[in-house]
Image (cartoon, rainbow, N blue to C red; front, side, top):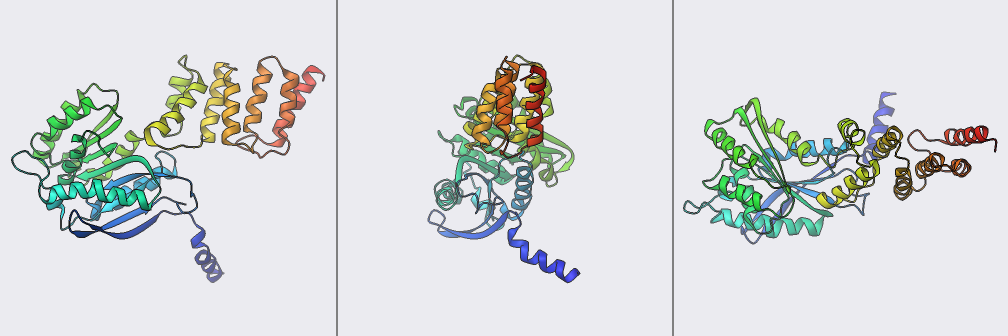
Length: 382
């Protein structure tokens, strides 16, 4: 029996859904050498041939790639973050040269300038050409490389949208330069900064001063999060910071939360339908992802409409349901509820009956829908 079970598992391993890690080398004209890459593709990347994915670029890939890739896979599995292509660059022997800056103007120079151009002009082009990438990019670094990632923000059109700074070893003038750049940003930017109570003292002091500057920025296009983890060292803070950074960066992407439901959908004058439409339009605009509306989000809006009695919202909600789940009963149910609550019970009854033969979804099935039709028939004597 055990042998048969083992054989079954082995034969079905290719059918299981899991993320893939690929090891590649890329030849760089800028660096005049090859570099090693680790690339984690999302689950079912090969099957979802029409889907595109944001890029998470991880410097210090020798040790940062695995924790970042694992967290991205975990958060995306629960839809708290989008699926992403995670790319790590191994730098164990080159990181000091890669992140080198000049002593006079404190900007990338020599190998540092070449590495800066390699990432922006060669590596990103290579990834865009080889993989299905969306137009949303995040870059991650730790101490020396965390300082380096911020140089991209000094460009007039930064190629990265999100910057995850794990205990950065800030170059002189960097705090002022980045604060000024973010304050003037005309496009959406996400900036994350982390230290710990047991971080390297000199770094921690500079990071806290940097936080004071960033916290004072008045720009609606900048989303900023700072963490100072208690009892965390320069290295252990990484394990705490990565999930915190993902949570803060992808707040809009996550499913409708209990807090959203109680404090926005039930307590404000905002239409539940408008909230749903705005949420998914924001996902498209912010992350470049055209995402199918989650069933659980439809259910949250359904419950909010029932509570607030905003029956007109059912008309638009049914259209969204037909567009997103055309073979199911979802759109039919919302359309019937609209007619039922706006004075057309006979029409509602017929719409409920139309659910026969459609696919069940959530709590909706044929028995439920036909019983709704029968209840109307009894009540009105049709």
